Image (cartoon, rainbow, N blue to C red; front, side):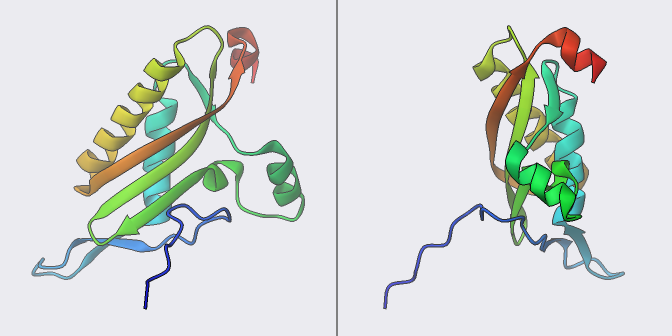
Amino acid sequence: MAKPKAKPFPSRSPLYPEAIVSGDHPRGVIRITGGAIATIVRKAACSVEGVTRITGNSIVDNIAEFVGSKKIQDRSIQVEIKESSVAIELAINICYGVSLPEIAANVQKNVSAEIHNLTGLTVERVNVIIREMEDIQEAAEK
């Protein structure tokens, strides 16, 4: 029987599983949750010059905030964990006038390096969605 294909990034807010960083440690197992990885992703992406913020789908975010769902940033970062590797998808806004491919590549590089440096996990991929371009002065005011 053919195995059904699983969507790598569910459309709903992901349940954050855990990655096992070290199962052989004499003092016990070390696990990292997807929520902790999402925090690393958020800080690494926002530190790239030209990125104004992590963002989500405004209609979905407005409804979710109204009913008390998770923060926008947590819904805008999806983490897929497999044993000792991760795949990331995040949505960002960037400043108007910057090179989209350059900023996206810098986000991918920074996120991947930061996850690997802080957790030791292998990063399979970092998918970047650029939602909007914002005026630099407007972004500074926000």
